[in-house]
Image 1 (cartoon, rainbow, N blue to C red):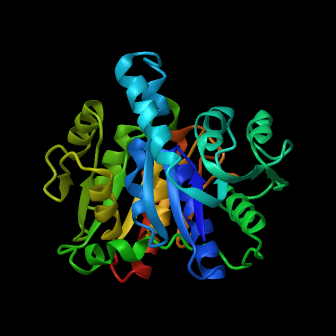
Image 2: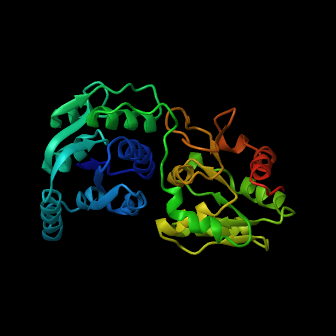
Length: 327
């Protein structure tokens, strides 16, 4: 049996789909998946053993020059690739009109998705042959697990979902060298940032721990922030610019992670690493960290600056004690 998954973005949403694959692969022997996903996240599905083929799509980039000759050629090539196979089922876990119209509609096979009252954009449900009601008041991971179970005809397991990608990076844990902690300081929204002074204070509190602190970054302004946080401190390493797979390998080898609300915090959860995610104006609610050893620290005032370095240091100590590396 071969199934096409349509879950194109964002990073967190793509990662949240992985436990549903694990459920389905355990329930149906021989089940294999192809996955249509935004090109920037195309590495993620390859880490799951049940995925055979990844079909990159570039809707975000294409819409900037939709009718240009090069983009039209890319869109034609994508259409040919997604229509190569006739699938036993197509599961649109995105629930948006653009993905349903530009991806799901093109694929060959019975199309499954959430019904009018369940989909993020109700109009998307008009593109599906089979529409399933999925209760909204549950974590995004559980909603997707339920959608897969109803689409493929098995009972959703009652146990916590398994991303099943940590084993892909097991070598990182076995060969990590000097024990280290990662601080994920970068996020897109200004009001989700923890102040640099607080990061610096936490780094200084960690000085006597014997642990190395690693600071990843993606954009130039994030690298400059990392340099300011690390200035003059020998126990802090600013990582080079890394691919998503390289970032995952670093996270997989960490003793613990502290993060703001960002896609990489969901990657940390998917890798089963102990993580403290800091929330201010955003509510972890039904989209917070899902998985083993995930903690949400929510500002009592909704302001990130009101989360103190001392408070996070104390929580981090507990995590490190559980992993055998006391501060």
